[in-house]
Amino acid sequence: MDLFTVTLNNIGGTILNYATFLAAVGTIVMALQEVAKNVVHWRISFNQTQFEKWLKGEKPLRKEFILLTTGGYESEEAFFDQPVEKMMGQIQAAANMALDFPVEYPHLYAFLTKIPGDSTDHDTWKAFAALSPPDAANLDTNQTNDVAKARARLGNLVARKLDAFQNETQYAWANANQRISVIAGSVLIAAILILSDYTKEFPAGWVFMWFLAIAGGVVAPFAKDVVSGLSGFSKPK
Image (cartoon, rainbow, N blue to C red; front, side):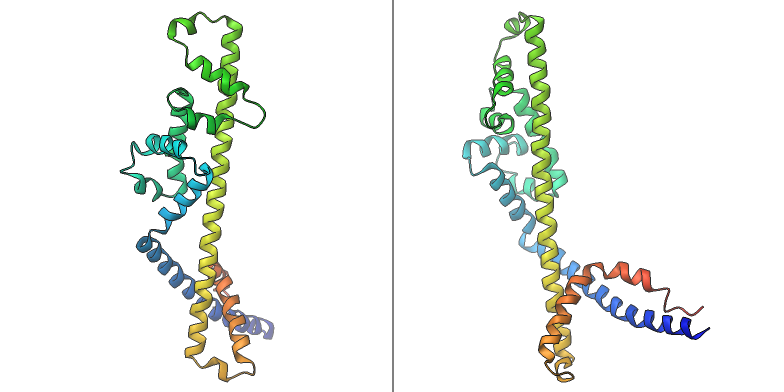
């Protein structure tokens, strides 16, 4: 092998060693994080907090939502202890029920369908849903078309509101997990450096140690990909 190849392999092997260490740290942190989630029921409290924030603390609205998503309060914890995607399936079912029966679930229907300054579609569909079958059958074609268009627009509006809630919740969940991973990884790396007496080898060792620990904590969750990419450098050809 020529000098360039040898040098490149040596550099790649050195970086690979550090990346492997960070990958191990990232794996340990993720495992501990999953254990902690199950022990303290973090997902339940997180989803519940996001849900309450979305409903803005309105009790009648919450009661209707929980009734339609869980069938009662007994299974509320099971409802919140789910990934956001699965929880949204039940929320979507509750929204469909409120749209189909706005008179029976007025608070949830109003929450999902009202927009500031315009309640035309909300009022049109609710008035139609309150009609008896004979009265609904007596509507002329124009009235029926108006009702159908109002229902279609409401369906689209509700879908966008649910999408916005799902996106916000997923974004907040990912950010919270990332922050905890970085903090836990940084603390673990700092502990390893302290136990190895790293601070005795350099001036201002504590400052540099925390710099390495924080940098390592940031990189650790992605280190597996780095290891895969660099593994070829350390292999002689």
